[in-house]
Length: 252
Ligand SMILES: C[S@@+](CC[C@H](N)C(=O)[O-])C[C@H]1O[C@@H](n2cnc3c(N)ncnc32)[C@H](O)[C@@H]1O
Image (cartoon, helix red, strand yellow):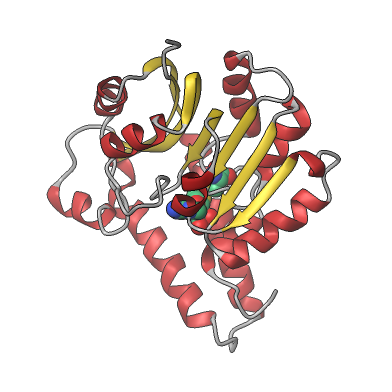
């Protein structure tokens, strides 16, 4: 790995979807859209690029993928280059806001586990839904995945998760989506096994790298991130699930 190694790229290089989701679940959601080959899709925070590659290979979509983290974008670039659909995927290593500003309206936007998908620092789902809706064609789709609270969390748990993320409950997510003008077409909550697989794979990848590179300059930062994620979910994991929502902007 290059000198830009960090916890997330170690973790995500080992995963297919970099979330508590499997590709079959993504496939089923995209199938529901009925989008035809050539339709335009934007994958915001593409991570390792696997979902962007899937959209192009399995559905023939013309995909724009955006990834902020340079090390992660390198992983995505490699996966895209190896794809038979590479000519249908544009990758930008950028914050999404700069790409959204110049992008034509999309048929599908995918934002799964992307902390700041509008790229303007707004973290609340309600504000993000409104911002992203403006980048969809009428009748366009938003595939949204994020953590959700299972109920009202204890205040310390909320504070720890809100150091990096903002999210709401399942009911709150649906309500925020409707308030932004979306129809909630489908929603599902990942099984605990998917959460365990995601967290376990990420943790093992980071710990294995640390065992092999104890003296690397990045080791302290990788260990700190791995310990923080493990602590967050040991402390508050009972209060969070992961929800996937297929939202539609109504046709005019
Ligand atoms: C949890 S990963 C999920 C990756 C991918 N969506 C998936 O489900 O496999 C979130 C990614 O979003 C990227 N990201 C977060 N905010 C971003 C932004 N405003 N613009 C571009 N990328 C962003 C992060 O660097 C990270 O790689």
